[in-house]
Length: 219
Image 1 (spheres, rainbow, N blue to C red):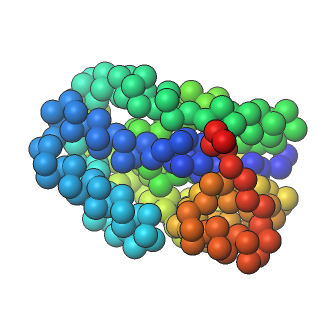
Image 2 (cartoon, helix red, strand yellow):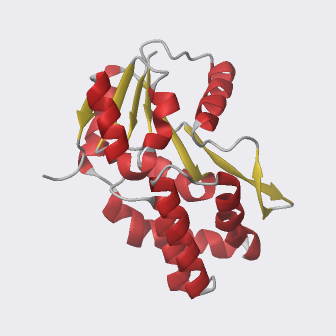
């Protein structure tokens, strides 16, 4: 069964769920508004510029999960899905998933956003297999730390190789769809790399290497 692998933020979604979750927390009064918004924007800019310190970012992004009860977090996430994520879901992205599903391909989302944020999004998109950053949990509470290798840049390859070994799938004839230069290591590993509404740096590389470039946004 051939793999069809998808990045999530700004690929299947018309926005960044991780950054949007931070904005949502500010709106809920769950974090110090001025500090959190400033840092959330700074890390988002670093990501877009390809210079994100992933360890520093995860210390920042996972801290609110440790500071609030799981029941409160889940209630907030339900609101977040309705108010923030539903408007981000791209009909063309859903159509692309359906196209690969109809071909009999194995769908997989791989993202540098944590599983708390992205698990319900993948479920909403009908994709059962998700590789995401794993927030550590102990005794039912998040600790604010990461479990395992973060699925970011080369870490996506590490986590994907672990998943392949566990599931028996292979990268033979695989597709990977992404918008970001940060995903270049994985794009270079598949037979069918596709740049989706790519950032300028990835767009330049895709044109140079004659990779397919597509848009899932409304024209």
